[in-house]
Length: 119
Image (cartoon, rainbow, N blue to C red; front, side):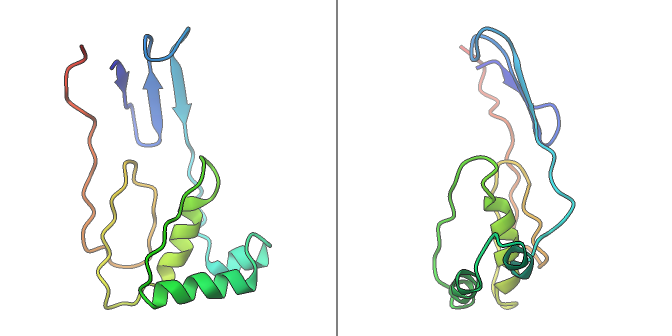
């Protein structure tokens, strides 16, 4: 598959994978790291939902965060990470390094592009 990564947060894809022209995407990440309080203050989340989600994290519950591009998954995960107890190990697995967790990360493997030759 003819595609290449140029730098973090950008991607180029060439024909025949995309038609009729090459496509380039560039994602610019915010320098601001929002907290749950910020999300509540800006009406992105209610106090009740903030309390419920932070309580789930503190209790060690399993949660699945999903959504489309630009829907706020990374923002929410960064904010919820504040509630991970200090004695917990944090393992982060992500294709593009986007999470900015304000705690010690136990293990963060790095994804690399597929090195299999195109057919």
